[in-house]
Length: 267
Image (tube, rainbow, N blue to C red):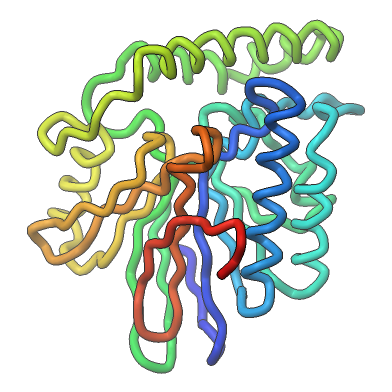
């Protein structure tokens, strides 16, 4: 379990699924500027920032190289960390091959599986369960098998022998093809009866009904779904749909949880 003591006047923030690099450099750069804008907005009162996966559309840390770009975003995270704000990153299915680069360069804490999170304030204690959301619940066996391959040390070692120009290009092509196909067909609508993450959430509720909020990404739909236990399942949407229509974040202060659509103007 991750345990935090929230200082008076401070907040904890959560966001997910930026997919920087998709679908091209120009649109990715505009999204990156929006992300930096959001981080500018929250830095005055942020104590901890949780980024719940798929920060990049593809990420692989070679021994002596990482994918080019994203310097504004990474620089901003470094500046927040230098200011004393804790950065927490959950690995997503698009950035599975994230190891220690961001730990060393940014000071981020990296997590590879869902985790309970306790936030103690002067008013109350929030008990949460958070993660990226990929591979949870029943079904989706094809992806679960693929994830075992992607996380296999031998497969990672072999991929590392590809020149970055080749390896990164292949990965970006595969990722973009899958995502563009999904976008052209439309994202699958949220169905409480079949949603894999919600099925996982319901199992966790049976284990611990005291969990107040379940916070995930991966689905690319902003969701705030009330549970029979009195808790809420939140999904943070994404930041690459047109006009940032699905770009939501969640904030926790001393008393409450707020689920907020990103406003670029900050007003």
